[in-house]
Amino acid sequence: MASHKSKSKTGGSSKTSSSSTSSATSSNLGWSNMSKTTEATSGSTDHEKKSKKSSSKSEDAGGSLDVLEGGSGPDGAENGLVYLTAKWDPDDFSDGDMMSPPSPACIRRIKNDILAIYSDPPPGLCVMPDPHNITKIHGLLTGPFDTPYEGGFFYFLIRFPHDYPISPPRVRLMTTGNGTVRFNPNLYKSGKVCLSILGTWAGPSWSPAQTLSTVLISIQSLMNEKPYHNEPGYKHERTQGDSKNYNDIIMHETIRVAVCDMIDGTTRTPMPDTLRAVMESSFPDYYRYYVQVCESHMHLDGQPMNDPFGDSRPTFNFRQLLKWLKSIKARLSDNRTDESDSDEDEAKQGEMTKSFEDCDDEEESPLKKGAGEGKNVRATGAEGASSTLDSSDGGEGGGGNTS
Amino acid sequence: MGNSWTGVATWKWIANDDNCGICRMAFDGCCPDCKLPGDDCPLVWGQCSHVFHMHCIVKWLQSQSTNSPCPMCRQEWKWKAG
Image 1 (cartoon, chains in turn purple, green):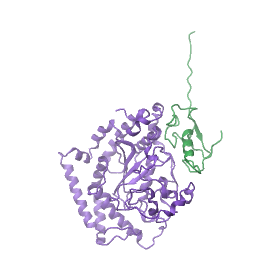
Image 2 (image 1 turned 60 degrees about the vertical axis):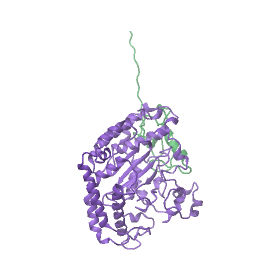
Image 3 (image 1 turned 120 degrees about the vertical axis):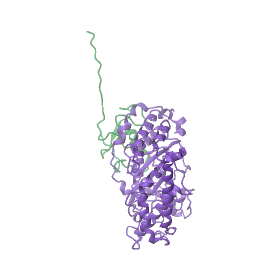
């Protein structure tokens, strides 16, 4: 919020539109094409290597760029090559899209998007604007039920360009085991999310009718029952059993990286405490499922993970995961029973109400929990959210938050 | 006598939707760049029957280099006459 304060051009036009917040969120614009984004049909299977041009931060940089030089013209969308060069990294400030201050219209739209999620939360999804910058959103997706991602916590960083919603947001998956795990043919270890509406994949492109919610739901739809088939050219299994094998790998890595490492790992990703609290309060609900997965897959222990796409992977070790899960459970339940903990631990225990009240006067907004678990979080989240965002809505034209 | 009266009139856009699909603001209001609804911030219709604030759809169309799809249905945007 602070970054655009002094530079807003148009003065406050806040009065006329303040009434729209409640109705705006309820309109269902029926974007029925959304599921198509997972059906990427064109494009080569080794597009990942070629798309590294813009991402200086990628861990696995390298690969040739020569192939795409001719394909980045205005017609590129037609031949499906524009997505190779699309800017995707929310931390990439090499262009003006991210550096220019957001317009009041952009800010208002972002707030609207966030409010829409708070008031009608899609399952398994919670978001939280950065306390210092409303154009930066922290998102947590929980892996959908009946998929190998079930119970996993996938943390995304989202940044809106200054002309949002004319241009799409940039999204990075932060849950990658420090850049070592590719969770999906469309979720790279560099954090790049390959999704046509983000401009990083062939297919239906961005439209300004999309919202934060539709973007996150589209990403969620990448995490499906058989992610093997997300890879172009792999509609049918190349080798029998590939899809099942890939699911076993993803299940293992979900528990190892998206559960244990996210909650307890040494390389754990820095993320807002509120989202961390969501993970820790959801963990016990999933615990039996985690254990059941480990126990039913122990026969694989010791075998190398043969990634059907040739990615290097570690060796299956469900026994070790089970131990790790148990130690996390023990630690979390210790925290819960020990009332004399520090402030930080209090937040982790799920006493969300307190933090919501605290941040009422700031840009920081409470998260919203959509899934079945964490019901107390949901209830308080909705109230805190609307009060926070509504109260600051009027002031944005003149430079944001008055308190 | 001393009787006097004050006329009050209301107006409303007749649109299929309550909100602009681009800025998500109510059609009763104006687009986020404007101060007053009404003639200064009109609604416009496409042949696909989708409605937007004029300022919003123009911003979108200008950002597109080649074909300009309707944000809602992705059909090529064609202004509806009248």
